Image (cartoon, rainbow, N blue to C red; front, side, top):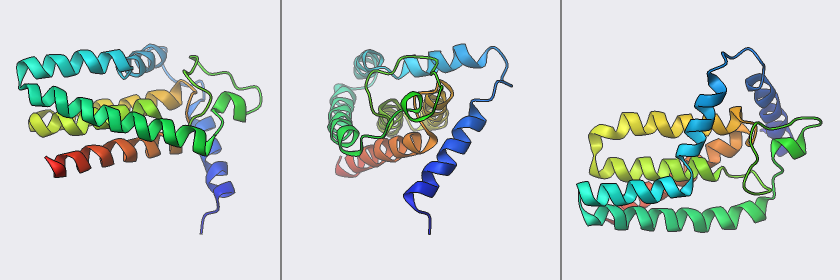
Length: 170
């Protein structure tokens, strides 16, 4: 059975492996763009566009999804109080400045998976593209040095779980 200390040990090992400097120069700007695409204002714009192009209900369902996702986010972050990599790892400096102090779960990732899940409910053909994008958002957060991989996995589970629950309720 894996203990919390052992999970953290492997999480740190994977994090350092992903931080190795062997990536092409294009990885950092792509990671920044993916991370930026999952900021809050982008979702508002996307929800409004989808509401106009598809149906107003899409905007309302996305608003519900993001409201629930933020409630989970603002409950989990201060409850778990997991330090971000720059605070947890000696002499590590992240590529961007995070918006808050704690890292578990990844809010960018949970938001991306809520968006992917709920949008694909209305546009099923977009699901493969939305999942690639949502996974890219999560990976970008690790590559930018603001989350560990388990933060991203937890964010994906929260986001996809909320989207699935809302879809079942529809």
